[in-house]
Amino acid sequence: MTMTMTKVLAVIVMLSITSTSVYADASNHIRSVNSYPVEQIQKEFQELNEQVTYACDVQLANATDWLQQCAYYFKLGGFQHEGGMSPKYSTYYLKDQECGLCTMTLTSAFKNMMYGRDVFTVLNETDLATAQYDEINADLPPLKLPSIVSFPHTAKDVVELVKFANKHELPVSVKNSGHSYSGQSSVGNSLLLNMRSYPEYSKKNLFECKDVSEDSHAAGACKLATARGKGAVVRVGGGEGNDKLYRNVGSWNYKLPRDQKYDPFAGAEGMIGAGGGWLLGGGLGMGQERSWGVGVDQVLELEMVLPDGRHVRFGPTEWAEKEGFLYPQTTKVEGLCNANVNHHESLWQWESCEDEPVWEDLWFAVRGGGGGTFGVLLSTYYQLHDLEPYYTIKKNSTAFDALTAICEDTEVDCASLEDSGKSMWADFLIDYLWNPSALGIEANVSLKCGYSNAAFDLFGSTNWITCRGDPHDTFVKAWKEYVPTSPYLPSANLTDLLSNAITSCKFFGGSFGRQRVLATVAATPYCEGEDLVVSPSELEGAEQNQFTTPMGHLVDYGGLNAFWPYAWSAMIPVAAFQNEKDYWVDFFATKEFAPGKKG
Figure 1 (cartoon, helix red, strand yellow):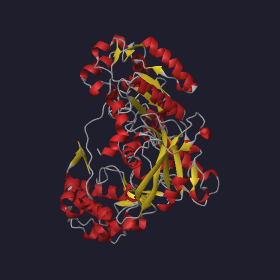
Figure 2: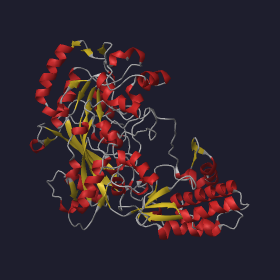
Figure 3: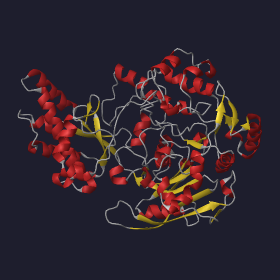
Figure 4: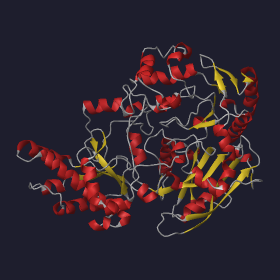
């Protein structure tokens, strides 16, 4: 940490590690907070609630509420991992539970994420819909729930809450959706700011920069967006998830006839916080990273409440082109302080700060340093990209059926054929993504294709790579030309079938967001032009999975989970693929990245 950063973070450290002496009796009801009797705290609650909006509703947390409104649904689903709950209960509903204490992972509610057979047995044998927490408290690990819960609606709400926390030396935790496997959005014994009721700015704050005046709130963001070659920006509130961002931008695109439509870069799950922890942790999408960067690369300006209670906005004001970088590199960051913190934004007064933070350090730290670490994020200006139709690279079922039949009906060794196919796919994909000239593909074409999850398993996946723009004459054509020349081509005469093993199709709805929303409305095909006839088993699968998401929202595929199983991921330098290609072909063709899964 630099000396300049120390100035920015001085109060943050105080909020994070000072006294957490919030004491509880067996029922987990608070008796005192840092030696203040609960009666005095409640009196101060009354005073605090007079300063914040009525719906902010500052209140003491109650473990029984967590048991009945949160833990109950993990039991209902069988205490399984993500994607394994039956029946599945969407995290959309979990986020909306009245108590505001729920997180998507059950174990994150316990100290040190303690969870085992004993915990499972106690919860499984208890009627969680009616039980009081003090009835089972002694048989469970300590909870690490917040002590105080609030639901801010305005910037002034947040400022008053942070000041209250400072006065009583309480840690502050900030929750957008609770989509943190380790529970970082619900710090034990903290004052929780549940941001679910904060303004949905993206609904009315999308700006085409050609129409933005110099005195507009979006002027600074648009200046940087224009320098990056982007034509529009959107402001996203600190409580918004990907669902709201995708739907609001998608709705704007078709609200009126438009000369240009736009596409946001955001996460894959609707509940993940586009205005919160997703961004603050870096932010991955669904393959667009290779041409657009990650979540933090989309940020143009930030609005926050700092740990000392100041309401600020800041962003780059000077930048310079630098070879080898996707966007102009920031050379100067400036910010302003709100001199009139008010519930009404029209009354805010942005002025120079008396004791300025080191804006450059804060800009660097917030974009990727972790949720709730450096302050409370209230809004973010994101750049938007020109919308191109989304396509997926997928199996050609006809060719795969023919290959399967040959394996079953002839002397062709199926295991050997599968190994050859996997090696061919890995060999081709490494070149297409990271050495495209070897296949006669231009770099800018290659960069339009990618995927954030495992994509190297030719036989185990249905849809692998996402591309913007039709890849038929690029990706698919390059594969057809590669197969006859592949060093991994099997000895059996299967060149034609392998050449036709993959194809491409346009997302149903044309964009990632629209396709993911449609999945909650009807059992639609994944791609346009595919068979619209839905089998009973497919309909049943939809009812048990995507239909559990609230209708018309971005689908919540995973749902909640009792625990998160072991898995790993890695950031591998491109040079490793280019210099040690044979090793990585073998790795993706033969090694398991998770039990029973390769590629």
